[in-house]
Length: 250
Image (cartoon, rainbow, N blue to C red):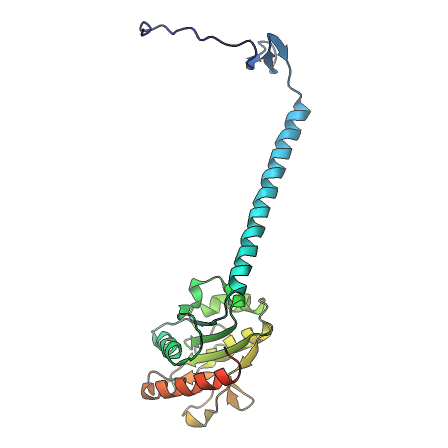
């Protein structure tokens, strides 16, 4: 039957149920067990809290370690070449698309470097990376894209034993004094991380004034000019892809 409005039905309590009881004269909170009052041991309570926190922290660290292990196992299993770029106008992305078509081996989809965790680069068998030159004349941050934000992180990676090839986009007509300068910046970061750099190109087929990407008389990668020589891009990419495959990018 329903209880009358304004009244509560009595609740039966077992004598063994723990019920807190606060003293009217002190701030101590007692616990009633079998009709007897006990004061909790404060040291035991603190130890219990500390133990719980320690166990929680340990479990959290164990989970993170397991995630790193799974990630490393997943990345180590990749046998494909990683293809990465970043772009301001779309030219470098278009070049990456040409490379993905012309490269004969297993290669990832072209991906903006700003969309990944930089440490993922360590998981590929080899790398092909491309950057445009936007900040002409700059000593660093020449790309004007996401590369500028990850260059220092790349230097701290372990790319030992990996073959890395670099390509870049520039404007040999309007900015012939800085043609594909950013390519060297990416090249140097990869090399500092321990990578074996391949894919240098003879500059004799290009019309430009100067470039920081000339190392030992050659471009340190493949320079492309989509603004003035887009009709040459396909052939240049095809020849370069065959070259780097012969140099061990696979």
